[in-house]
Image (cartoon, rainbow, N blue to C red; front, top):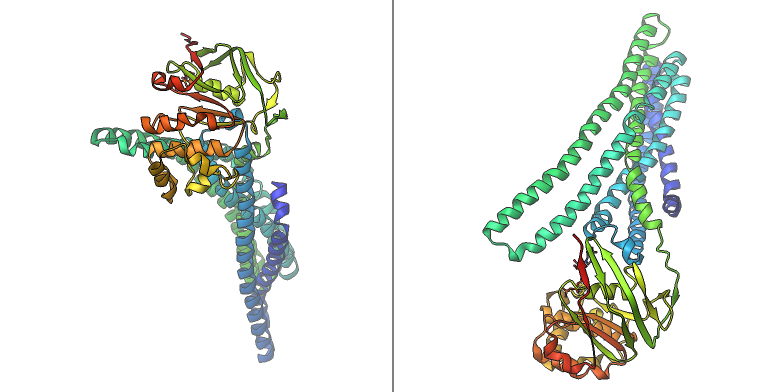
Length: 520
Ligand SMILES: Nc1ncnc2c1ncn2[C@@H]1O[C@H](COP(=O)(O)OP(=O)(O)OP(=O)(O)O)[C@@H](O)[C@H]1O
């Protein structure tokens, strides 16, 4: 958090300076009524003097309040922007295993809710704590100087004791808040799937989904209620301890007035100060609680932002031969045994096999997303290499960005388009025309999306293309046109595909994978 606070130190200093001016202006407006009560008989000049002082102090207070709000907006936006950016970049940079520690919905919820919530409940309350301390000090001194020492000491001591009360509930509150936010992450993940299921739902299944959703919603809100229940109690406890100071000062003013130890003006000032003194103490208590309630969220976000994926293998961008030897991998209850395979640049390979045999898992191992349990994968005799510049991976379900054709195939301009027009000739003209003219690639058909995914892999110009079911939504004409151009691709191409009989004649090298054992 320190790094983010340092980034906005200018705004923080500006805010603190404004808080000081606000406190000074308030202290003057609090002092003047009592002074007026004791000195109004001194003449019209004194009264005018006090009126002008009051108007000036009040005007300064208004101007400073405006500045405080502006500083608050700027620092809040900058703070949130830095954290959201760092969070997004860290998630994007994570390796496969680290990334899948959380679900996409949980990341969405953290990016959209947790960070915003943390900024709301951390930054402003943290500065408000300083503001409250400043007010307590200034009002405390004013009480001692302008009112009466014994009242001032009683109020100050009571305040110090009251400021410890939030500690009683703070850690429990933080724990409940973090449990609630975790549930919100899971809920976001689930409703994402429910909304995506919209098109397959009929009236009956829609009702089932509504019931399941209602249960999920009740579960997440019950967590919120659990947090709020304690929060309500904490507020009453913290508020009550602060209000108790008002009771003490009331009793003391009454006794001092009775014994004629203070004037009516001093009593007026004591009432006004003690009421105003209570506000910052109350705020101090509430804000300490709010800052503490974000502790667990802060730790979770910091874990994600600070943990760097530590693969520091040698990066390679060309390869002559890839070999797999005696690979086994257990995922959940499934044990996968893969046959030994050899892939030579720039040959083209077809991989086929039963559903669930481990074909996609093989690609994830070639990408080093999964670590092997046994066996090895060698890239030109090397087993510890960074393959991100070598392999272009196209997963079973095409990833389509919410942008146009060009940005999709070049991945927002990352890849060169020098051979794009050549690659476009690998597909039927009318299909390419349709894909190119669509302004929002998200709306394309399944087969059209697969065209985009293939063109993106080709434009990467990487020497190894790993294409997982690239034709599953394409018609035969399109598939055959692409396969008849296969030899024009200057890369090692490994394709996972079913209905092998239809296009096995396009491949000289075919591997069949039937090695999965299901554990009991
Ligand atoms: N992360 C995972 N956790 C648990 N099991 C997994 C995981 N990933 C894959 N599996 C299991 O491993 C097996 C192989 O999956 P894989 O996706 O490689 O199959 P596939 O050969 O590509 O099948 P298909 O042709 O149906 O796409 C399946 O039984 C799958 O359920």
